Image (cartoon, rainbow, N blue to C red; front, top):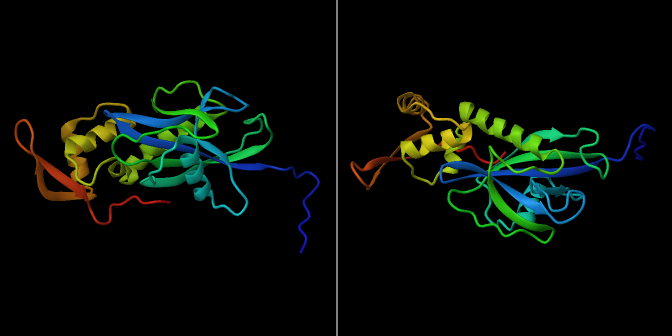
Length: 224
């Protein structure tokens, strides 16, 4: 069967962009690349690129993240969160981008850049540098999505190691929300949600050893 397109149909390019988050020194960071090619050469941007024929969208997102930043670790969470397709968003033509939100593992993730990028680095997500294309809008929407996921899911746990303290979990929430939270109200709300459980261990340090927690068995946000 031959598919016949209507006369008004135009060729549209399909791309993915990846907003990869991690928390360093209690600050929410996003991973950016410095573009090597036109348009917007030598400008910071989100990792991303065109989807190959026969390639799933999440596969394209993982490939672009790996190839453009040098990150070899699998995200602890990956989800599509919005499609950007405004006319004129890319000077090369009509290009629709499916944006993905990713959470990278706890701790420092080394980045090197890729063959098509000049450099890759972490930036404070709430105060990024000027970005290419409509990537500032994509980043802003990704942060709002991340903040929303704190309210109805347990995505904050994906930023932490397997065991963590309540102050560490509160620091994750504060980094994502970009504000200070009341300690008593935060702990009361989190402990009532049954998304974590005591690990039976304590972390030694100055003063009283801190109780360590781990995520409950059904509390994994997972890959979407």
